[in-house]
Length: 193
Image (cartoon, rainbow, N blue to C red; front, top):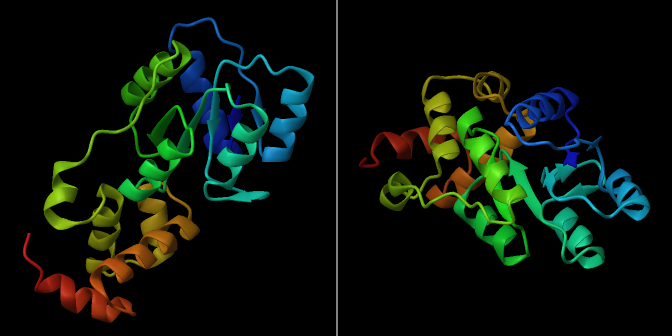
């Protein structure tokens, strides 16, 4: 089951999963409610790939709602919000895995094979993040800000929604103790690494 409210991403994900060489039936939904309705009819899904931000669920709430009713169901998060805290929270709340929407086809295919086989899949800690305190996505967004791009342009360039870019900018503001893009740029210019 693929649960994502962006039809284009959901269809691309379905196409990728269908080509990884396992005999798997793929079903799609765009809300937690639609997923729960489908699971009420047939709870035999081997794996749910779940976006974190849906029209009827924000953040980890969707995962918690599913796990409350189907505790044995393997649910992996597929999200553009891929910072260390989000991944750790998903894992602590019972996710079987976490796949970044920035992952390539090879990584996505490997993750799905492991998850369908009953394993778990979580990204390894990024050594760059340990050095500079930023996730890979935050670093790419900061680069876009440095180049003078608007949120919409950064979102387009990185294949993210504008809301996701704003979410990561808020995280950057918090990490760097600033309140504006100008302050972020000024601080980032003098930041080592």
